[in-house]
Length: 281
Image 1: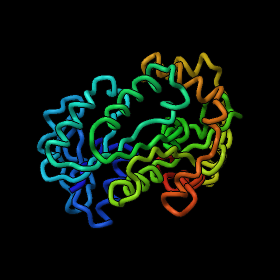
Image 2: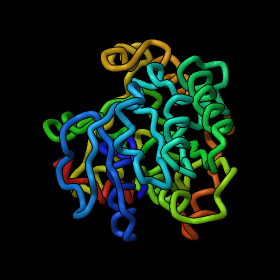
Image 3: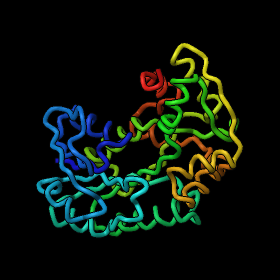
């Protein structure tokens, strides 16, 4: 049995499907009611990673754990308590979804310091561990859904600054390999897409997938900050703006790790857009 926390997220949802298709028994953990369209045979457990005791039923009989910090709830987690509970239940392997910012933004309270504290709990857990550090997600483009549908327009700051955005499906495939196969213990994988992609280019790729042009509007930094502040804590906003506006050389570097694990190149943003264009129609 493999336990997947964050099972309704962009990575977790695909990971559950990938593991089930490979014939694994899977427990999908989420805070809400049963997610729609779970694969046949997948068990759902309503639990909350911020309340470790609720995870006990999910961990019973499991051999491996995909640990996701659920984003904005990460500061409420007690990762050591979760991992101790997992170890007591007989779980032997943990794959953690972390962030590239642990390495590239160590001074950031949200991306660096908090992420590092969770990673340290994993490293010291006594379990076989693998840590995944993805960069920016291609699926962040879902923020454009409403304006793309209604106006065929998208807006973002720093229109010509590129990052090698990663398809969450590639993260899920790497996670599945690390959960199922030997040879990944003690590895920290940096996960990126195959090439730099700017917001302006992503708008063009989305338009190409839809078969009609998408107009790109470049926001000012202040406009972007005001928009992000509606759903992000201030420290996360500031670090995010720094990454997308003035990325370090490490944040712009294309990592070989997806290809090393999967034996193929990572998907491009254009690939992601074609696969998910129905959301923008």
